[in-house]
Length: 280
Image 1 (cartoon, helix red, strand yellow):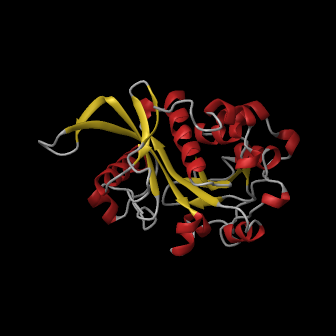
Image 2 (cartoon, helix red, strand yellow; image 1 turned 135 degrees about the vertical axis):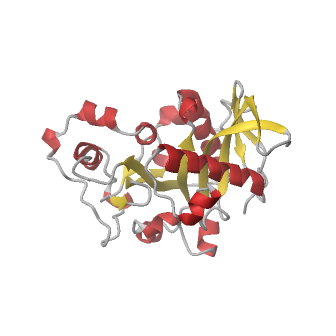
Image 3 (tube, one colour; image 1 turned 135 degrees about the horizontal axis):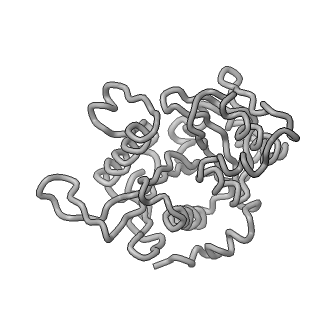
């Protein structure tokens, strides 16, 4: 898949020196994997196996199947190897997997935690796309960078006629009782309606309904959510039933479901129905 789509390397948007586009080579994929390693393993709580420690890359079998959105900073030129040419630094990444590709290669990554097949079967006339492995370098965790990533995703959705986006989103920590307010907030205030509902697999299921609705401090819970989850909520995302503990990454995963037809209209108009807002 990598670099074989017609839009590989094509700019999907710019804000000042920042640009979003798809990776167009194995070298760029490796740089995205290195960025993910820095964020997930060095900054956050992921536990690296020997191979991951040796390569300093976060990678799995799905990477070769996915397209990878990159945010580049043209004001920060770096050498990725000694004596190599200066190139814009990759400061953010997001990977996407289209249903037609997943169907040819054993399904989606998310199906290892959630009963995705039931959702696909219920909406067999729709075109699904999985989002995953989102990360941004700490100095770039700003509104501009997030907006640019979402502009890239929206452009990609339009290019490939995607009807539904979904994927795992993570809250740092593996003790659901310590995350009771966040999980209960998502359960009570953002749960997917029945037609879009999906449950965590039975052997991994963690109940998100940990506090009664009237005991959840709405504002405090919303503030405490990771920026990515707050972004999903603003876009109009639904959340699945049950969470999953990911001990390797030191996180608690929840499922987001975003039918394109249900996206917040103000965000669609913000980016442009033709993804023209930040087009270059």
